[in-house]
Length: 228
Image (cartoon, rainbow, N blue to C red):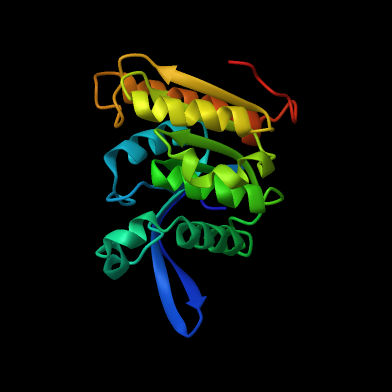
């Protein structure tokens, strides 16, 4: 493989009679063994500076990333579609299946990084595609939108929530209870929902990098359940 790959990708979709493409930004470092697919939250996009900050931390660990828009530009103008978790999940599964047919990406271990509603799609997809997706990290996620699927998730899952994001903390605590896989819930003290406070996004990036490093790059154990 060339030294590294950095490019915009267009992933083809066929839904009923519609043909469309999802746009994504792909980065593959030299000798990467894992790929993290990012599913952003409602109202955001693959250009999200927060997700890009986390992606850079993963690049430093030698991991590939794919920041993907699960809706087309026209669809994103429809408010309800941003919260259509079934649709977002189907799209994320389609992206994962595409990755597994790509000659360069198919050999990589796949994980999901989801924010807000994107985390719900990541958890639902992981429950359905545990043979393809191998780890999940949720940042400020809405796992309650995937509640019925949480007991079916079998891959290591990390839930990260800001300490000032009290309502979402409660949602994630309940999600933690429902998860039956290897899991952890980390509350970043002094952080709000978007982790905009100084240094807090760095903490998220570090936590995510360590989780994916342990479970995608250097997996040493499976199905262990962490206590809070």
